[in-house]
Amino acid sequence: MGTDFLILCGGLGTRLRSVTGDAPKVMAEVQGEPFLDFLLKYLIRQGARRVILCAGYKAEAIAVYYKAKFSQIEIIFSVEKEPLGTGGALKNAVSFVESPQVFALNGDCFTPVDYARLLAFHQQKNSRATLVGVRVEGNKDFGTLVVNGQDEITAFREKFVTTDVQYISAGIYCFNRDIFDLMPDGKFSIEYDLFPKLIGDRFYARNVKAPFIDIGTPERLVWAQAHLNEMVES
Image (cartoon, rainbow, N blue to C red; front, side, top):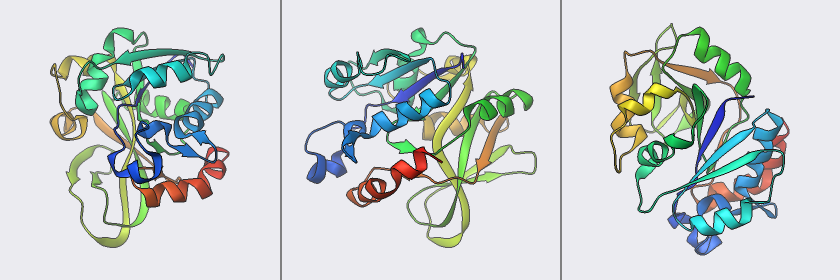
């Protein structure tokens, strides 16, 4: 697959410090390996050829570990000199992007997605930006997506407690390269400062019924220890 992958790796992992010490969040060990290893192995199976790691906190440690880790793919490092937020980290890496579309992923989340189908959906919809939504039953920890019958994202709802089926962002996106032109310089949040501005401008959701994990808390990290292998292999 000739589409580049951008992976956000700058998370401090503050809530995981009781378990992981001062390691970057993406380097939290799951079943004896850094979480990011599992994600990269899955992307290799999906046909990834170029991966750009957007690193900030302890970027040097991440670079040293991954420079010779995977020979099957080209790994490029985009390093923040200061924290730039999720959006700023992506904008900081734009000079490394070579493909007309790009996948962007949160490095502390995993959902088994067919990226070729995601790209085909994005192109068929003539979308500028496509966000992967994942189905959850009950929700109190994540904002949810509001999507119309044409798969367009019409709104985002803040966190609320419910037992109903909802779709939340899986932290996986497909962008046309021109989306970077809409991004401001400096620090900003892609979720709060960019996505609301894209509503009504060829902004779509591809909702999937697939397992989802983020390792943002010790409890979720424990769940990943038990289930991540089966998710990667699904």
